[in-house]
Amino acid sequence: MTDDIPETYDRVGPVLQSGPVANAIVAAIKDLNQDVMIVDRGAYLRVLVPRCCVVTRSAIEKHLGRLFRFPGELEMVMSAFKGSLQLNQDDAAWRFAQPQTSP
Image 1 (cartoon, rainbow, N blue to C red):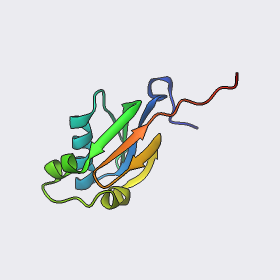
Image 2: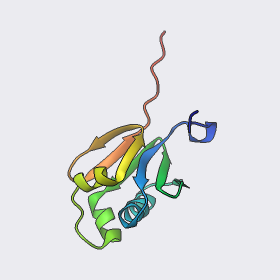
Image 3: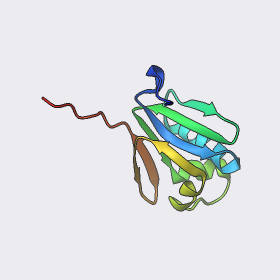
């Protein structure tokens, strides 16, 4: 069984354990991206954005109301993700990688 249905095939993003930190991350992602889809499964939130999902430490801190250790705290609430992930001390980006086709 797969979560990849046609409407979400090229969408990427984190899967976050529900709670205040996840809510701040979701709010930050909504601020920085367009067409954000949230699938609420109770214990976790699946965030899906077309092709590229970005979030910054400063945007999370704005919603969380405190300093956020980045990327360390992100990994503590991110149980999985879809796409290729690039992390540094200021931001994270999940990107859709188109499968390579043989000529």
